[in-house]
Figure 1: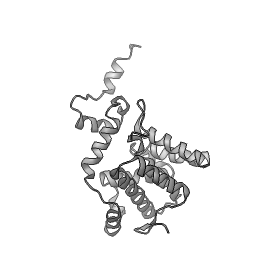
Figure 2: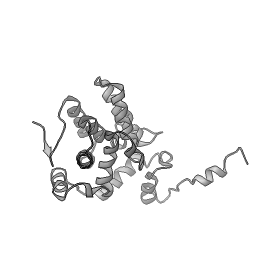
Figure 3: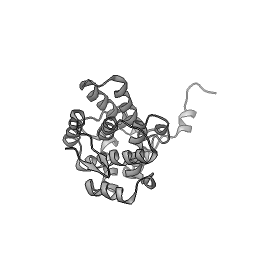
Length: 212
């Protein structure tokens, strides 16, 4: 029987179970609990807004959304969000999921650190971001009752989360700082790596060899 938290049922079909095992194997306890909270908070925000969602697609998006930070899935030359999105799409393809559905999950993960845009797309895409916003920033908590918040945190506690997630980000992309350009991920490197200097868009325009 699947777990139910705050009235939200955790998907427990074959795909969901396999995704969960990959997260257990290659993630950390911090990323595991965070990813489950992302699913639950995103689902609760969707319930508040009356959105119809495919819970398994939302679940896979939540489970894979930070796996691009892990040693198993991270690359050297692209954003961690793309690493997680690519891994999720490969996983779904291997499980025979329709390409169009796999692309929804890809979008959900690839866009989850991009403000505003996900909310204009399908609910599964919007609510991965909605869950991340709630758990990392506290945004949207007014859409989740105190009782439901307490139920989620009792099931998947935030243990040293505020500092721990910053360390996870730094470990996950600090060695590839060029991939953070144009994203909020540069904020992490400015805090954790004193030698890091954020590229400036105006400087890049000025350096264009086309002149003018």
